[in-house]
Length: 144
Image (tube, rainbow, N blue to C red; front, side, top):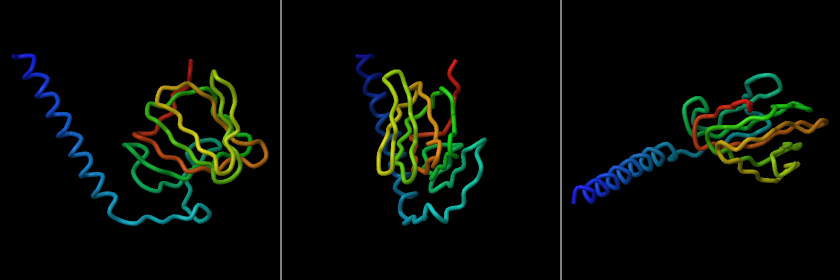
């Protein structure tokens, strides 16, 4: 009986948290957002990387950005805590993991699960411009 109550209470807590998050997400999503990738306000994020925030806050939670990699950008082997979704708009996002290499070109989509070790960079001639969404705070954790 006690175990059944614990399972029931846990299920109720999960449903309440999900409902609260959904309502907050709906409030934030009530306005139309339009940003042109060619005139967005990009800020340098480190050597060879710049981004323009479209919604959310990459330092705090879920978000979307336009991100640029300079030609030949090398981010080394790393992971991210949260899932990252990418659609390339110009150039090519270069990607490597234990399964091999991918050249993610204009119009291509890539999903990188949180915790998945990989290398990323920009095409040596064009670099890369891509739309990026993440399910939570953005981080880049160098691989050992």
